[in-house]
Amino acid sequence: MDDHIHALGICFDNVNVLQATYDYNLGGMPASELVYTYTDPLQNQLDKKGMKIISLKLHREITITYSSPIHGFLTFLPTIERMIRTLSIEE
Image 1 (cartoon, helix red, strand yellow):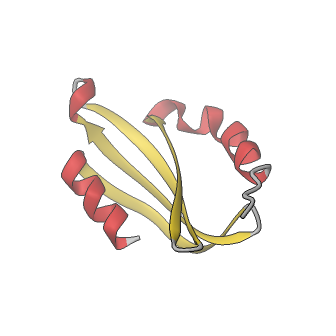
Image 2 (cartoon, rainbow, N blue to C red):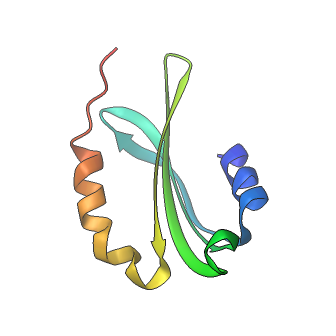
């Protein structure tokens, strides 16, 4: 989680972590969830909100990232969460 937060700070301006939880479930695997806001320097300093779901399996990191302008984040979040819940990862 700390590495992801550090990388966000390198890539984006004004990163603010809103939530960091360690009890997320990703396809039956334990995962972490990171929710944050930031300013995207590549999109005319647009203020955005993002979410990362991070899990480890067999020494591999699996990361799912969703972001949108702050005002539209909640619009598609239910669809994103349904997609994540249906994810299945085979060994």
